[in-house]
Length: 531
Image 1 (cartoon, rainbow, N blue to C red):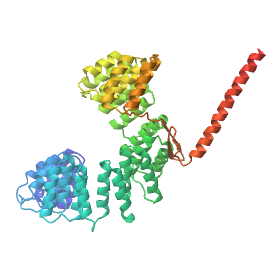
Image 2 (tube, rainbow, N blue to C red):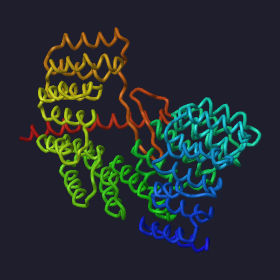
Image 3 (cartoon, rainbow, N blue to C red):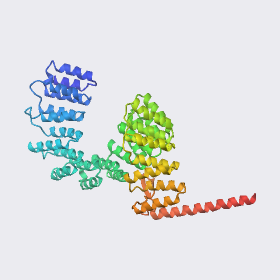
């Protein structure tokens, strides 16, 4: 009969099915059978009904469930939105005269991670030592993951170093990922390089790629991805996501297209997140039509899919098309989130649609009950400032319920530069000097305002202030993608390996442009002579 229950719950697709299966179990006493009950909890968990499973679990009469059932319930609660209940249930194991095993501790530590409750994690760690599981590889791996996820990477490393005798690939990966997630990619890379070659797998490589992408070091991320290919490690969906993120940061269109073709060729399952990453990559790499094509071909579209496409259109200055896309999103009954409205307000700003943007800002609150964050106010300030409504933008800054940050004062300074308002520019710079004392761009913008208004003395004085305060002007930079590799250049930098050849070509182009200019001038003089 247990096998029949297992078969039935395995085919449940709704709460009604779950309730019918439960109704079948109770008259036959199968809700007290540990195997049947575990299958039932797993089915509830997979469908998102862990709370229903927990209510069944707490009402089971004697004899009590065994440790296997407890573990299944703790795992379900940890995965659902009930990590506190998972920890509470773990504490009841000994009350039930049972002993946690090497599965109980990793399951409850997942709940600890969700709560970022390192204090409770330390208690579980002490408990694992007391019952003799502190050297079990699964327990140590879970502890390393818990400590690093809670920001205590030094504690994770101490555990990792103690476990040098029996390290497996999961433990290595947990430590590399721990460093990477906290942004310490240099230590992650160092540990990765000391990792035995035979133990590196796709998870190891992906952790490093994702770490570099997260820390805005896309070139390093792509270099690791290329090494991964050279070592014949097949990337999975998560590796593709991390690499596409790096491509989007760099605008590496050729490599992004190669990844897109790779996904199609190898039949990767059509993850919504992969489609979203492709849309983002194409939009940020300047290929908005391809981004739209991926969007239209996507079978499933979440709020993130719609928002990514709207943001891409806004980035390309296609404000009205972005608003049309938002209207389609509303017709599709997809509720926007706060990020969606950042994209919408940005689109209105680029298209100079002031009234429309202010209308969307209002309906964000009135229709969708989304509380504006400082970034939304920043978008409104930018919207008004770009259109020349400087006093209105400044009034928003004074009235908003947040202390203005550097981005908002920077928007006001940029708007002052566009519209030649030196008074507001000076006011904005005073705040920016306190928030970003070494940002040379802020000084340069106000200096440009002074120059445009013929206030040369003030412009010179401002540059003197920069020198006196040790503020160095950041050189301009550019990049170009050649053969799926992005090369970055900074003004005056000659460190590139092909620097001599590059400057030689530039010199030839410069000479040709001067000759062309002279030829055009000579032709003009001849034409005048003929007339």
